[in-house]
Length: 233
Length: 233
DNA sequence: GGAACCAAAAAGTCAGACTTATTTGTCACA
DNA sequence: TGTGACAAATAAGTCTGACTTTTTGGTTCC
Image 1 (cartoon, rainbow over the protein chains, first blue to last red):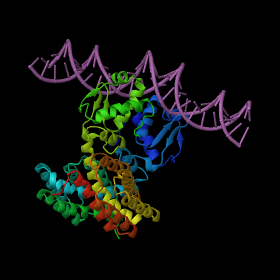
Image 2: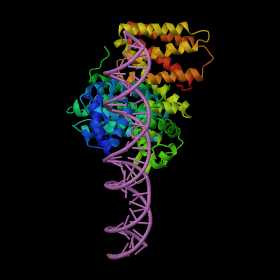
Image 3: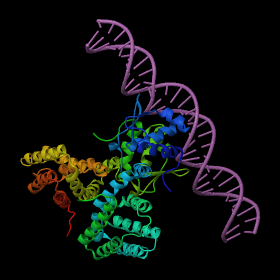
Image 4: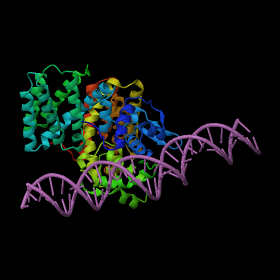
């Protein structure tokens, strides 16, 4: 499913990346390239490539005569899909899921508003199809099929916004939605109110009603926040 | 000021990164590692490290027997600070500035709302100081000092939100604000209404009035959108 | 006690030989 | 004529060993 895997250096990253993002090496820890190369049984060149990638993610900094230093969390490129995946796979998963859901609550309503202005006829059709698919699978433990349409729905919204920054969050949102279904609400049918909201958003986008699309999407994301007990008291 | 520079591979990236993000090599273009190494007069190991970094940014994909293929724009990690810097430095600057401003308009109001709930007394004080600094430099062509406080203001809002994803956008917002001043409005004094809004946001955050902080910040970002002729008709 | 100097350590760089996967082209066979 | 298997070419991938450069920390001398 996930990650690079391509090449030896990718194999090393699959182990080292999750370890670092899991906080296994506290910030300030010093690693030595040669020792790592030995530990992973690869040549120094391969290990150097792996370190370079970690460095470009700001997970570590390499300094002469010192070694490879693990950087504090606030330095990390937390928008790097790879980093996000590593963190979602580790103990930081709940916190990562929360921060991503808050990000969603900021981005998706605005994206929906823009989609209402910029969506093509084709995108409107696809959006409606997704909403209908959600309705059709909203009862009777058809969570897998429901999730499929839910993910597709949000992906269309984000790409139809016409903003590349929003569009690039589609994969992240997909993983949040998938993760939520697979952990919290796995056994219950989805909230009927949420399903209705999706249908209404599709309508609003089709009608070109930006304000309404934004407001309705805001209600959807508020629901997502409440699921995680992130409330506005 | 900017970029890595550290090491030979960094030097290579300083040239290759901007070239690729500028679209100098159309998507699908094939580069060969050996040829690049020759062109930049570095060893293959160094060039491989550079390619690995570009690969982790999803700017290129390396495949055996084929070469290093330039990926289409929609694959790029557009949230990577390095990529953002490269694009801001090139011909794509206006478009990049626009998409980032739209992102700001989505994120900052929500961040301000969260800041109103989570900001410490110290952060509130700093925010007020920033707002006052803006007022003090809002007249008489003191744009540099004004910008300094403006940048600091937005940085405090984003970090005080308590959300790591928002906090990591502080540098990006800083560059947008700086870029805007250095190009568009360089010679005019800032809009008095905008200055007032900043003061009011600081007040709202201090008072813990999340809804008001969010609404006022929304007005600020709407102004930023209007400056770039991104309107809501 | 401070400044200059020296030695060690670890990353950085390079060159060359070798391996492996993938593509493309060719040839034989149906 | 089309199709499948096989062979050759190609470029990335890997490994090794020697060398360079920077930085740090200690030591010595004034």
